[in-house]
Image 1 (tube, helix red, strand yellow):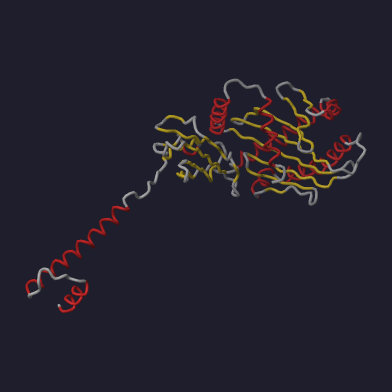
Image 2 (cartoon, rainbow, N blue to C red):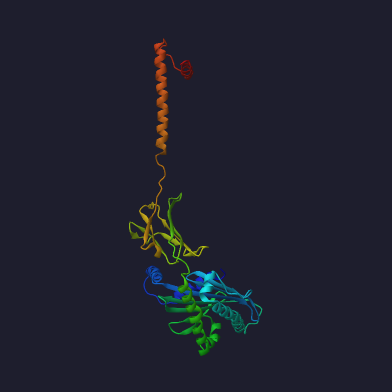
Length: 369
C-alpha cells in the first residue's frame, strides 16, 4: 500500500516523543504485554489514512484507506469517487444512507486538501512542484469505551504537525506549520474535528464491531530451525506466521532463562496477503555454543499461555566411517576364508604347502566346483 512505510515511521516518531521511564528493553517488554492485554480486553483501533499529491492549483492524486484492527475496511480515490467496502456485509452493517453521506464527505475533502496545498505553497516561487500531504487519523476504544485519538499531518514524508490530545493543542513540527495553527485551533474547526472523530471514526468502528468481528482470531504457525555455518557460527531462527490479531511476543530462552546475549534480530510484525501477520526472530550464537537446550517462546492470545518451541539440533553422522571400516573388514574376512579353504583343498590333493596360491588358482578352483 502506498505510504504505508511513512505511517510506520510516523508512528515510531510519535512513540519517541512520548515520555518514558526505565530501560529500553524493559519498555519493549512492557509495551508488548500491554498490547496483549489490550487485545484480551476487547481493545480496538480504527485508522483512516488520507494521501494527496498535487500542486497549488490541482490535485493529481487523492486516496483514502480505512483500517479496523489492521484489516482494510474501505478505500476511496478521486478517479471513481466511490467508497468501496472490502466486504459486502460491512456496507450492510453501516447502511446505505451512512455510506452515501461518508462518500459525499470524502468528495468535499478534495477541496479542503486543495486549499491546504494552496496555502502551503503561497510563498513559493514554483507553483507547479508536486507536494504530498498525508493525514493519519486514529481512534481507539476499550470495552466499547473511547480511550484516545490521534491526528498527525505529514508533508513530503516529514512530520508537519500533530494533535497532542493530552495537552489539547496542536504542535507545529515544521516552521511552515505555524501559519496553520490559528485555523486548527479555532472554535469552528475544533468543533468540526470533534464531530468527525465521533461520527466517522468511533461510531463507524462500533457499528461494524456490533454487527460482526472484523476477523476471527487465528493462532500462529511456528517453525524453529538450526543452522551451523562453515566457520562454526550457529544461527537459530524462529518464525510465526498466519496469526491474528497482530499483537505477539517472541523471545529466546535457554533452560527457561530468557536470552539477553547474542546477536539478535527481528523482522518486525509484517502483514500477509490474507490479512494475517508474520514475524521472524533469529539469534547468532558464539562458536562454543551449539544451540542445544534453546526454546523459542511465543505469546499470542490464541495460544492461551506462552508456548515454548524447542530447537531440534541435527548432529552430523559421525559413525559413517565406522560403517565403512566394518564393511571392508567383512570383505577381507570373506576373502581370507576363501583363500584358506582353497589352500586346504590343494594341500589335500597333492599341492605343496609352499606353492604360491594365486588369484587365478582361486578363480579356477571355484569354477571347478
